[in-house]
Length: 130
Image 1: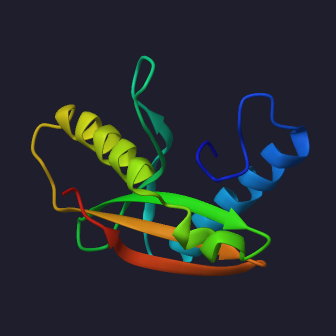
Image 2: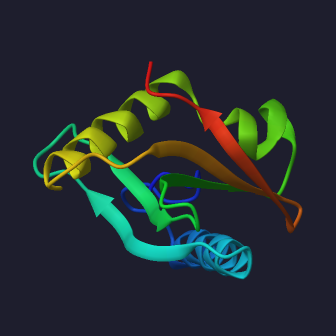
């Protein structure tokens, strides 16, 4: 789960496992709410692009780009606060790249799934593309 706040180049296996576990928990949470997985860890080609942790399809046909963040502490505002303006910009860039590959542009939204101290919260419409 690149961008979870856990992984970085050279990150320990434990950090990667924690990030993957947060992403797995987020995916299960969204699937239980009726969303369907379309793509996991969508990345744009080349350096400096972006990544979307989960691309989901909501029951109403909306494509949902999901950023998963997890923190064990609430330092610096917790997991939700870690979705910085720069991070949002990179997610929007990746979403635009993803959408360019489709025949028509579906309704879309950007959600966050955050996990603080093991508690999962789904933030629908966490940010927009502006």
